Image 1: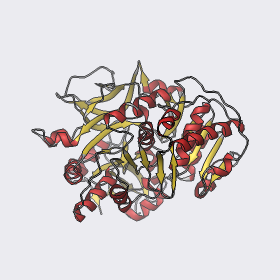
Image 2 (image 1 turned 90 degrees about the vertical axis):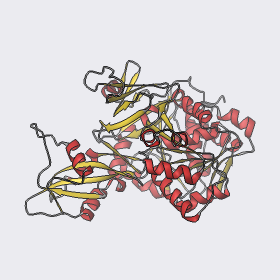
Image 3 (image 1 turned 180 degrees about the vertical axis):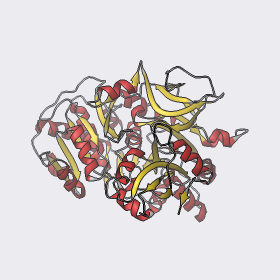
Image 4 (image 1 turned 45 degrees about the vertical axis):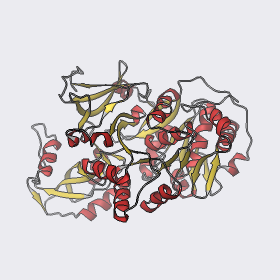
Length: 510
């Protein structure tokens, strides 16, 4: 079989690096030859199950080896992999399943019940400690490969409506990441790449593919902790690592306290949430390696701009540079446009960030109107507010989509607002993000109460956690007599943000 692509040719890498370790996770390990063989078997086995081009294969697993074997095998068949977020509530997972309509699902035993609850008629392969071994014993068919340019990944993002939207990423989108980023971040066959972020996000998935395309060894901790990250850096000889700000904060603090020296690390990439100036400065000093901050979206297959923190520290005004999201990659064009007229604005003026790049997704699954609003004449509207300074650096000024990024997770305020509005004590609520050095941002609930009622932060958090993903619960609560509104009754979140930033929440009550 001629292999399908995920932006690179796994079979070609296996031909060069067959005996080398491709992925190591806990007690499990596969070589490149074994991973390529698994992908071949997966493709044939999926065909034996009656799947073909365009069918959706849903994954609800923490296993890196199974994830990449299934992803590569599905791509060879022309099927589309849908990695689902195992942190979602059953109701949220049901929305993803209903939208994706997968022909087959794979789930760790601990998540199988949630999938059955989401759709009792959907066939589910339950993965145990042996991974795919038992399922691969079934009948396999020969398969043919589709041409390039087809979707291979469907990654869900909630969107401003709070409804799940499947972002369609093609093998061509991925090729821009796995080859060019590998060169940008100096990956080689000698690299040891540490991946500590979930594989249901584009950040983790693309990092893994970059490592595999380079013939590197990908190390994936089965359970992520600061101690485990230190172990893999110090004992596995990790040269490259992808971390979200919370992980980076904890790692840097632990190493600084212990006086540890990271002799193996060469490049640390930090993304998926805002990175504070203080964290970039401390991490650069403590880690003593190249520190890179990135900005991007699922819809742009991840990073489209990059800031070299170590280089920025040598600038005349390092803090001004570190507050930016860096410059676009050479293959990426970015413009700032007026959100209403879509016309470009002057340098230094704020507006909406538009991106033109081969990384731009092909749209949303089954959502023509949303796709047409997203993709305009070769450009992608990010929904994020920003400006470009005189040195060509992008600065993120606001989120037009009103999204909170906390610990690398996207949290849309409308989802949390809907959940908290169901509490009997809450008359109305505004959910906003507050900058936080460790988490990037934390969820803050600003509420109006029903007459004579009370609510505590713990009650609000548990109420939200029982209805949406627990990671979306509020971390702070502000009670006000009245939420600020315009003449049309719309809540003025910008005013709330300004009041909280100044320490004055208006009519806040304890």
